[in-house]
Length: 209
Image (cartoon, rainbow, N blue to C red; front, side, top):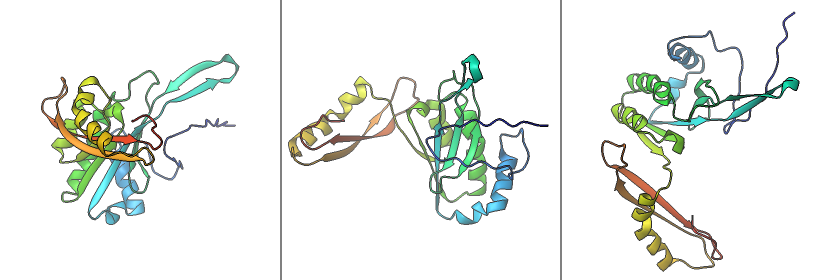
C-alpha cells in the first residue's frame, strides 16, 4: 500500500496543482511548457503583450516529532495577467533569492521570444532579483523589466529633489504621491539604467515612505 503525505505551503500567489500536465523533463521545462501551451491554447491568447512575474517563497516543514526544520526556497514564475504558473524550481532553503535565477528564467525568455517575436514582453520581480545578470538576460531578449531596488544612501540622495517637491505641494489633510525618474549605475552594473522613484506621504502628517 502506498501512503502519500501532504504538506501545506503558503505562496504569495495562489497555486493550483494537479497531475494531468505530463511527464518530468530535464530540458529546463520547455517540453512541459509546450505541452501546457498545447492543452490550454495559451499561444492563441497572446496578441500584444505578456507580463512575467518572478517570485520566490520561503517554506518550512517540521518533520513529525523530531522538530527537524527543513527549509525550501523555490523559484516561481507566473503569467502576470492570468496568474497561471509558468515555471517552478525547488531549491534548498538556505540559498539567496537570486541564486540560479538567470538559469531559471533564461530558457523561458528564449522560448517566448522565439515564438512571439513581435509582442511586448515584460518582467516584474522583487528586490531579491535585482542583479546585473537578470538585467542583462532581459535586455538580450528585448524584454523590458520592473525590478524593485533595495534603498541605499545614493538612491536617497538622487531622490531628494522629488522629496522637496512633495513637501512644497503637500497638504497635511491629503495623501500625496509623487513619481520621478533618474539614471543610476550601481558599482556592479556595466551601465546606467533608469530608476523610477515613488515617494508617498500619507495624510495627517504620517511619515514619508
